[in-house]
Amino acid sequence: MGKFEKHIAKGEPIEIDGEEFVLKPLTTEFIPDFFRAMKAFSGAKEGASIEETLKNIDDMGLKAIQRIIEGTLARSYPDESEENRKIFGMKYMMILFPKIIEINSAQPTDMETIKKAKVLERVHGQTTKAQE
Image (cartoon, rainbow, N blue to C red; front, side, top):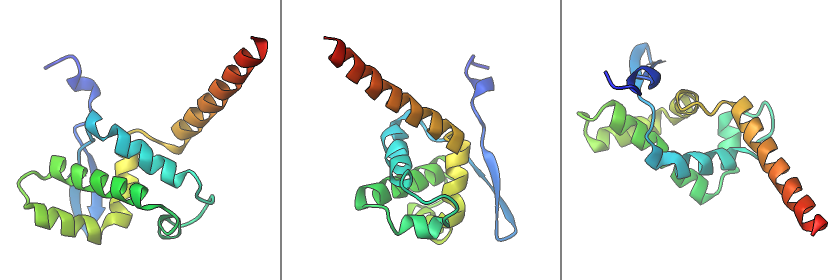
């Protein structure tokens, strides 16, 4: 076993229509899409449904969500046809997407930490410029 293997999730179960599926985490190639999707959700009202939130996401955010769902299904079920993965992803996107976010470790508390770090970075940058 490699050093990373014990730290890498093998997949997380999710139940859809009474059947269990196991979703594997994404790889680093999805980082831009992942954070684009997170940014798209950053303006969402607290307590809003995912359906309501998705209505306010721009085309780039929607494309990122699409690639994330399709990428997760391709990693998790490579033997399924691409067409079936796309249909499944579309049909169950409201169930899949929150679970995909969860298994890739971007919990809302983590996003709050990232937002705070960005604010501190901006403040530090302004302080540095003001001191010059």
